[in-house]
Amino acid sequence: MLRLFLITLIFSSLNTATFGSETPIVSVRVGKSLRNILVTGLDLKRHLFFNNDVKTYTGKKTVKFNCETFTTLNKQRNKPILLATLESPTGLLSYGNDKYQGMFKVITNAKGDSCDIVNEIPMEAYISSLLTKEMNPKWPIEALKAQAVAARTYALNKIRTQQVTKELGNEAYYDLESSEKHQVGGNFFDATESTNSASIGTTGEVLTTASGKIEPIFFNAKCGGRTLRPDQVWHNKEEGYQSVNCPFCHNIGPKAWSNSITRERLKSFFLWASDQGYIKEQLSGDLSSIVLVPDDIDKFTVNFYINDRPFIIEKAVLRKFFGRFIFPSNTFSLKKYGEGITASGEGLGHGVGLCQMGAYAMAMRGWSYKKILSHYFPGHVLKKLY
Image 1: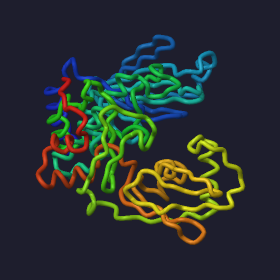
Image 2: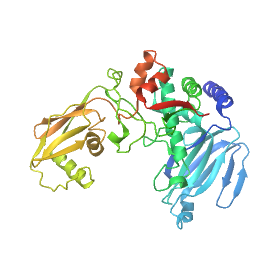
Image 3: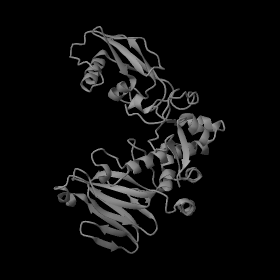
Image 4: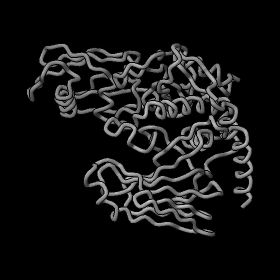
């Protein structure tokens, strides 16, 4: 009870300080493909949109949605339908074992066979709870502030573009999902005094490009010595990004890693890369000769000779095929090992944008969040939007 009381006081202060009319509301999908949804709250107000039924319950109430009963609504549409909203005058709702601030939307899944649940929450409350999931809340406040700015910018880009999925666009009913695909958000109890301070201390601050655009701002756990640009990993060029040296994260977090790949798996990779268009020439199953050209960890590509023909492969493509277990990061070198190869590297994650462990090390040295951000994003400008 004491923890709940203290956190309530913190959020009351946060609401008073920042939740003005210009503070954005972010819609986060916190559950997907659900057969049943249970939402609990005090004095719940439930609005069913398909028959415009509005009902207010007195006291503590749990509302259940049997999502299979709504599947017929999707037969003619094949797109999500807003089924209901739920809110409480306390500003808190429970779903599953977690408590959330804000309002819930219940929507049909795009396939029409289940439901998704979406949390509508003021941006700064979202950032405060997210920091506990995306960064250690016990880390120095300047590192948390840098993460807050990065996460806020990413979320605002998703809100403004309304392209959470290419298939649904602005008909998705949510801005981003709580997952590694976008950002991992938290719940009401994930917020701490430190994460609230980081959110309040950077309220409304984002990184923009030199031309003033709010583009996606990415972050990773540990870059391994040098950050990458988005086009070096995902082929999508984003304005303002530069690859920068990061000597700060070397002695923090996961150490160097090494994994082996057999010749047969390597053959499978090249055939897949050819089918996917990562290799311009079409390769057949006859890969009798695969020769690795000596590699270096600082290179973003690696050279092979296949049946005496030269091929250049982006290292990020290897990670895409073999996965995070074999390639924990995009910072690695390859070496011949028997009939196969050995991958040896450093870092954890895709390596684009803010290096979280580098930010931790910088903050421990006394760097401000503004200085940290200017190091990782020299082509961007820190701007206060609200």
